[in-house]
Image 1 (cartoon, rainbow, N blue to C red):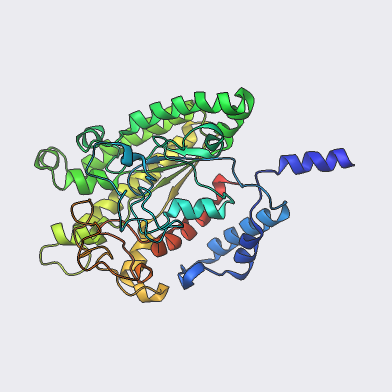
Image 2: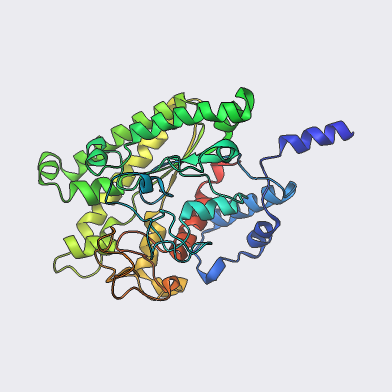
Length: 388
């Protein structure tokens, strides 16, 4: 009997969450009173997730590791080590993080992926791969290869001195070798297979490339450029699958036309969000869903989920007060209208707000930690299939 019980415990060792999360699920409480509206299907998924989590012991994580690729939305500090303008390793970035220090995250505090890691039971975060912390036992919980200003368009990433996705994959191969040395080949293979993979890309391709590069927007319509980017996406997923990944969550584009920077640069006399840019994002997202569905059919054993960040962020922008926010038209840092680099969001930026929890956006592109909490709530619900 004891042997059978031990086998069951071993079988479920990754399907566990902290006790506090079980309470969270059961009473449907969202930190800081920021919440999202849920339909019946979402409620069923959340309670199923809660039940599954609480059945098992509460001393490990739901997945063994989190491995992240992409852009500034998920970069935790890789760009600190690159000769690029796109950095967040200086105040006021990070002022509300646990150590109140800038880490390289483009936020006042935690990213949505950090909050998701908390929810999945991780006590520390997978390190930025270029950082000194990416060594030894720290690699057992994953690695972060994301680079601000990167994306599906390799040329744009190179021009911005960011890490292109192809190089991020090369680093992942290197990581696998290091992991095998730390954990042993068998355990490393298990970690790679059962890890949760996250990909966030596309926003920089449009905002920092397509809309500002006259050669690109003359050569492609937005629809054609979306098709080109999604071809890169499909190739990336196939290569990642070939390297052992089986659980992948990919983020949709947000409502790009609602970003304060987009309103400033492209809104002209249009009130509110820039409709044509939002339309481009919606068109991309529709194609992304189709591409993801096709990949799941083509690649045996692949679980892939598209994380819809468009709707929850759009809802926050349109009705901020419903979720406890005060300001959704501008970011907290500086003027909140164009700040995205060290030139504009820095310790001397005039006008930086004192309470970022009231703001949907931290700078003119990236959500605040409070908004990331709302997005993370949505990601957990949408990613149920990846962790069950």
